[in-house]
Amino acid sequence: MGLLTTAEQNLLIDLLIDLDGLSDTNARLTLIRGLPQQRKREVDLNGRVRIFVSNLVDALESLRLEDGSWPIALVIEEAIKWTKGSLLAGQLDSILATARARPPQPLPALALPPNVEPYDTCMVINAQPFVDRAPLRMHLRNLVEQGLPALVVTGQPDTGSSYTYELIKFLWELKRIPVPIYVDIEWYQRNAQLPVAVVKDLLTQLNLDGGDLAQQYGLSSLDHWTAEVGRIIFAHANREARRIWIILDNMTITQENDPVPEAGEALNKLAKVLVARAVKSLNLRVVLLGYPDAELGALESEVQAKVGIDYVPAVLTAVEVERFFADHLQRSNRADRLPEIPGLLLRITQMLQSQDLAASRLWPEIHKLFPDYLA
Image 1 (spheres, rainbow, N blue to C red):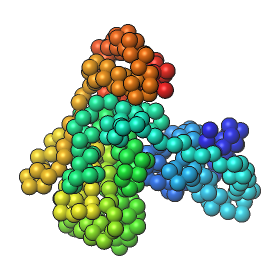
Image 2 (cartoon, rainbow, N blue to C red):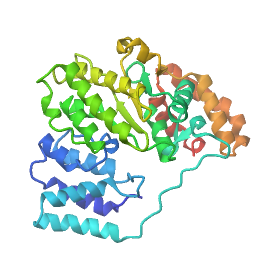
Image 3 (cartoon, helix red, strand yellow):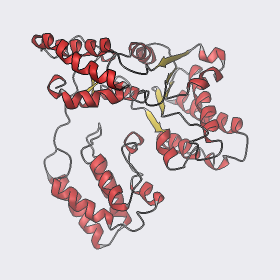
Image 4 (cartoon, rainbow, N blue to C red):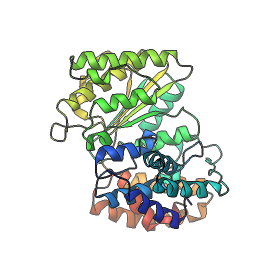
C-alpha cells in the first residue's frame, strides 16, 4: 500500500488538475522539483493535463524513499505552496494531513540469502530478476572494494544498459555504497533541457553553487566549459569524507535526436572529463550508462586503461535463463521445483526465438507468465 487510499488518490488527481498552468512543461517541472533525481525518471511530462496528473500520481503514489518519506507527499507540498491561502490549498493539505495521521508502515527489510554476496544476487529490489552480467558484477565489486574509478556500460539501444542501474540501486539500498548522484540524460532530452540543466542538476545534488557556470554555456568553448565543471566536482570530491558516486544514465544522444545544438557533443565531453577526473581522485566514482560504442575510443588511452567497460549482450540465451532459475530456486529453498525447469525453459525458449528480447524487456514478460517462480 502507498501513502494514500484509492479514494484519496482520485481526489488528489481532481485537485491537481485544477492547478493553473499545468499545460506548460515548466509548470510541470516546478510541481516535481522537490523529487530526488532518481525518482524524476518515473515521471512522464507529456500528455494532456489529466493524463499527466494521472500518470504522475500512479507513478509516485506507491514509491517510498530509503528514509521512509514519500515522493507523492513532496508533490502535494509543492502544490500547496503553489496555491497558498486558497480553498484548493486547504483541500490538498487535508489529504496530506489525513494520510500522515495513519500509523506509518515499516519499510520492507532488504535481505539476501545466507552466504550470498550482493554482487552475486539473482534478485534485486521489488523482486526484480537480475540475470547473468558477470563482467558487470566484477566491475561493480572493483568500484566498491578496489581502485576502479569509473565504469562505462555500453551496448545497442534497448539492450538494457540502463537496467544496470537496478543492481547499483540494490547496492546502495543495502548501504554498500552511498546514495549516488544520478542524472537521467533522456529525461532532460525529452524536455529539450540539455546540457545546461544536466550540469545544474549535478551541482545541486552535490550541494554546490557553481556560480554562474550554467549561464556560461555557449560563451566559451565546450572544452573550457566542461573542464571547469570537472574541476569544481573534482575539488568537491577531494574535500568530502566519503566517496561520491556519479551516474549518468541514458547517455545515447545522436545528431538525429539531439534537441539542442551541440548537446550531444557537450555531454560527451563532460562524460570524458568526469571519467578523467575520477581516475585522478580516490574519492570519485563515475558510471556512464548507455554510452555509445563509437565514443569509447575517444577516451584518452591512459584513462581508458583504468576504466571498466561492460558490453551489454544484445539478447539473453536459454542457458542464462536456466542458470537464473536454478540459482533462484536453490536460494529460495525451493529445490524441489528444480525438475520443473526444463518445461519452464521450453516455453521461455519459444519466447526467445519468437522475438529478440533484452533482459530489461524479457523479465516483465516472464513475470507475467510465471509469477510464482519469482516470488
